[in-house]
Amino acid sequence: MQQEPYRFETPLATPSPYVLGEGLVGLLPAELHRLGFDRCFLVTSRKLFELWGRDLVKRLRRDSVRATVLLVGDGEDQKSWRVLQRLSERLVQAGATRDSLLLALGGGVIGNVAGMAAGLLYRGIRFVELPTTVMALTDSTLSNKQAVNGRRGKNLFGLYHAPRLIWGDVAWARSEPLRQQRSGVVEGIKNVFISQSGPAGAEAILDAWDHADLPRLVRLLIESKFPILRADPTEKGSAVILEYGHTFGHAIEFLAQGRLFHGEAVAIGMCLAGELSHALGHLPASVLADHYHLLGDRLGAPTAFPDWLEPESLLQAMQNDNKRTRQGLGYLLLKGYGEFVNPAGDRQIGVESEIVLETLRRAQARSRETSPASR
Ligand SMILES: NC(=O)c1ccc[n+]([C@@H]2O[C@H](COP(=O)([O-])OP(=O)(O)OC[C@H]3O[C@@H](n4cnc5c(N)ncnc54)[C@H](O)[C@@H]3O)[C@@H](O)[C@H]2O)c1
Image (tube, rainbow, N blue to C red; front, side, top):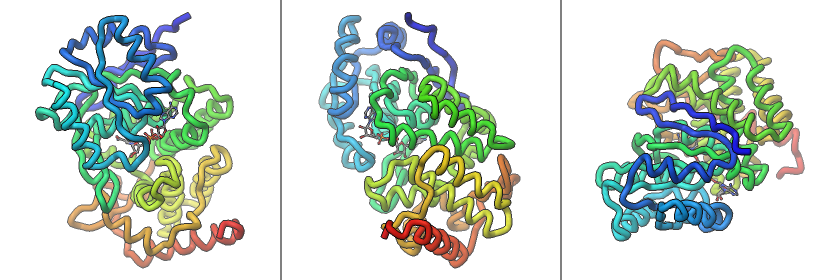
């Protein structure tokens, strides 16, 4: 029996309706007709088209929604100018107009590339997110930030463009490999560290994870992000705390060239941000230990300094971080659960490179000690 979907709005300056449930595909055509369109374009990868897209297109066609399929590749390297330009030109060539609807079926990468294309085409056309990963269901679609990567770093080029609708059918994420689903949980654990008063929220998320209860997991992860967005619906002020661990994490993900998923790189990045916060005397050892316990022992995400990485190259890659200002690179440093250093300012703190490097070297040495076989 079809359960009543959970309907809410993203708590953002330009909110989007979000419909969440399982097995919702039959309800989608009516929702699209309500939005109105001349043409629909489904952006997805070949793999996702075979898994879910083909049936979706058939289902849509049965209810008079004809969708032209535009395929892009899979993986982080698709978040590029090259892919964005090609997709945008194909949309024009295929006859997209200002009244067309773009449907993005995929994870955060496809959502971001299609979101960028929708934001740029004719200065902005409407797009609908059809997330297929835990990460996309619970994090990347709860944001109006769209971006592609540059030669020197992640998310260097982007814009704010809200989806007209987010259609969260948990059924699509059931084919996502476990390691990837796990990576999607990391941002929820991060939300607990940055906005709650203790680890209880993380334990609830991990309990849903342990029980493989995907609908409950997704709902808890989504709700973990709400208070942060409500406090800053523009995503331009205090919501910067969502980037905790990302200065390290994005650079690690960029250098990993596909070896790590986004959430995995963020888990390592959070531990390094925790180490730096602790080394500077801000974060108690017990909360730092919780980083390793909740992300590593409990969730099973990587937390060790990667064996293929050198501290100097990581620090170098971090210089291209997209949060850099004229003051240089700033770090989001935790004092405890839900407490940042410099809360009245931009929450970012300049730290001398030598101190950061020392922290990275210590983390590397410890990882080598605990895992001698890794080298
Ligand atoms: N504010 C934001 O917009 C925001 C927030 C968080 C993350 N992100 C971005 O999201 C990206 C990561 O997204 P992701 O974790 O969803 O990864 P992804 O989009 O790269 O997908 C990972 C892989 O999973 C495959 N896949 C997707 N759904 C599947 C399914 N249901 N079954 C089987 N395979 C499936 C994809 O084909 C791909 O190979 C990063 O680029 C990150 O920067 C953006």
